[in-house]
Image (cartoon, rainbow, N blue to C red; front, side, top):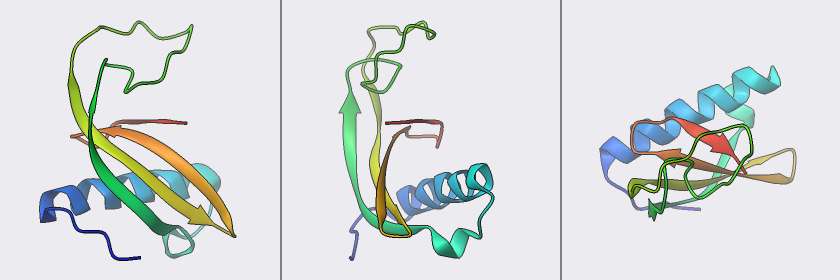
Amino acid sequence: MSVELPEAAMGIIDQVKVKVARERGIDPDLVKLKSAEFIIWPNTCLGIRESTRNCQNRITPGYKIVFEINGQSLTYHSDEKGNYLAY
């Protein structure tokens, strides 16, 4: 699938892709980008509420990124710097 985002965004998405591959112990070429979109998250937890994180109610620009690994879709929430939380 073709994803239309600015070049800077694609760099962030590539960073997240490498992190995902490293965490799973696989080659980054096995992590396929399915979709990505720019999102304005409502908080610093990127829209994900976790009891272990201290979230601030502050608008945080970032991306919702969906990768596919071995036929399984995995969704990640990222800020605009490439920090992310799995969803």
